[in-house]
Amino acid sequence: MQTTIVITIPNYILAHHCSEKRCKHDIIKTKANFEGVDFFIHPPFYSESKEASIFPTVRFGDLKFANFRNLKNQEFLRVAPKFSVKDTKQCNTFRIDFPKEIGIKRIEKIEEQLIIKLMSLIRKYTNQYWVNASKFQTQKIYESFHLKMKTFNLFEGTFHSDVVKASSPLNYPIKILHLNQNLWQDCLKDLNEDNKEISNSKFLDGINSLQIGDRESMILNFAISIEIKKNLLFKEIWKLQNQEKDYSEYNQEDLGIKDYNLPSHISKHLKRSIINVSFKDEHPEDYKQISYIWKFRGNIAHGEKSVINHDVQNIRLSEIDTEAIIKSVIKLTEYLESQILNVKSNGI
Image 1 (cartoon, rainbow, N blue to C red):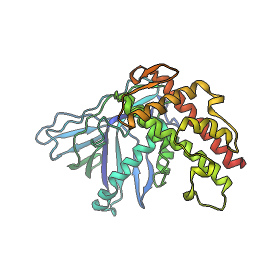
Image 2: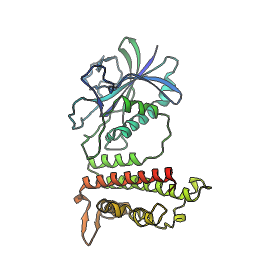
Image 3: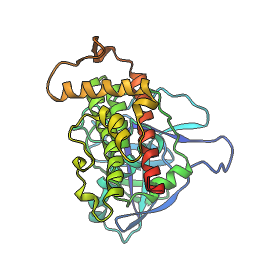
Image 4: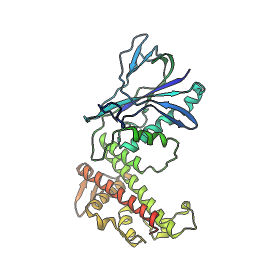
């Protein structure tokens, strides 16, 4: 008999849901593998808390769960994103079926990392920045139910996690994609990939920080995001000039860089490098916004007030145009990525 776990998260995932029958973009039940364990994962669906009785029966989509322990006083609070888009459904619950030979101890061992990795990949591929994020980092990001099938679509099991409270996602000037079958396959394919490049993750953390009203964290996350991308470019330039060395030996001083001033790195230092480009020259308005980020980052990181001086003018963090900031971070990220590809492909 299979073992099924049902995962419910505090935020919604926006998934493609077409009114046409057999739409190729609709998510389907898919076989996947994580850390050597095979499983089937069903399309995400919507579930909600119901008032529990002494012997509660709770319905999640087309599934019905009976006789939960410790469920009576639990309430899982959710706030829906402010989206209303055609051919889209809001989902918060996942069903995963493990074959009977996979014991419960093995499932419990991989469960948390499987869920965190899957949510992170959905966040990465869709830009749904609120996924896998909560207002307080100490909050858990999911609830789990371990279930055994009694009859078709009727399960018994126990509550396996704590209450989570979540804030409401808002829409910002980034391209939000709806999870569809192609993106779903990409997420499941990458479950076992060891991707340590967290630039995109820190960018989405910055968006989420802005959403919950924490502009200081927004600045720090954006600064980390673009600093990572900048370092990746300079490492490729360095490697081109030091082909006999390993990336782990990278030292920015080999490229004549002795400071940690990102604005100067993406302007005069890139101009002096073998690729001879300058973000400042090509995108002056975006460069100004990046300079704001870096100045605010310095103040915040050193415990100073969130006020900077630019062109003999004091600027408060509460007064900046966050939309312009976000667009400039995206512009710089795309610029750095294109330069990285140029260096790798053309050797220039």
